[in-house]
Image (cartoon, rainbow, N blue to C red; front, side, top):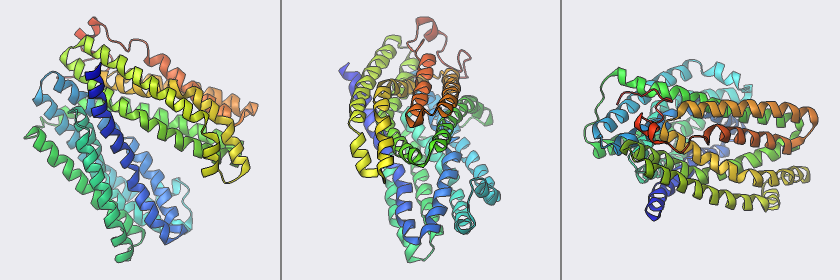
Length: 440
């Protein structure tokens, strides 16, 4: 167990650092752009919503690449690992170029769709059209994260992420203020930093693997098929969060303000467990590639043990979080009251949520992607059904978070059965699109 723990945390801690560093890129833009006035900051906000939605759809470039590369590594098939990584990078560039073109051509309709006001439209258009150029780099970075995680290396992505953020912090003020480019300078600074980061990922991957080998367009289907399942799962989760926010908006402004505070804090707590989930993707897939059934089961048990421990810690933090969160973030007593009404619910949900976040990593490592998608779809339906009752019955913000809790439980009911593989499953290629083996 000590050797398993060492491997878990050797992967999880740098991965957590990279996850924590990435939001700093947008935070740096926010800091500098806020000096330009409300219109500039509004332009940044609407673009944040646009890019947040666009790029979350392509998360599969990381989530599918990691277990496929790790499985090849576990089987000792270096050529297969190189092929998967090459295909992931080619797909990232192709999808990135298409995304750039679509965002530039349809920039104004997209901004109108997210209710961009006339006073914000001009700077928002400038930012969107410049930042859209970075789409290939952003997707290569996603593929790079997935590739290095599959190679059981989370330190290199952390290093590159730190470089990207440092470059952005240096370039932003020079372009925004030194060259008087305003919002356009913030966009251009991000583009430059992300292209340098993407280049670093490619260079380091070539150093690690030697010559990257791509076997042609047919190999892309091995990523696109599971990628479609991951994208559907992501959209289900985003939809669950969106309808929850819509339900809170119908309750009132105070509840909506409290929900924003709680939701962002909840995402931060999820990030703490995401390091374990990333370790799970790599270690479970490696064991599967080796055909090491006992090793895989030991890893899963240990990950769930650590997830349980972190869930208990988070539960304790949520129990005492009400007054500090209210003191730091709540602008009024009414918002503070709404906060206090929901923290006990979050404490109750902390352990099941930690199990779920770990299991997401385990199931990804097993490539049980159809099951993951089904769990997210069931979670959406369960949460949506309860939210209708919550709104009609006036159960308030607490009821909304109980609905989110029902989503968590519904997903666990789908993911938990069969999470420990059997000998028969291991022999037939566990998890490849639920029984359909992809080409190795």
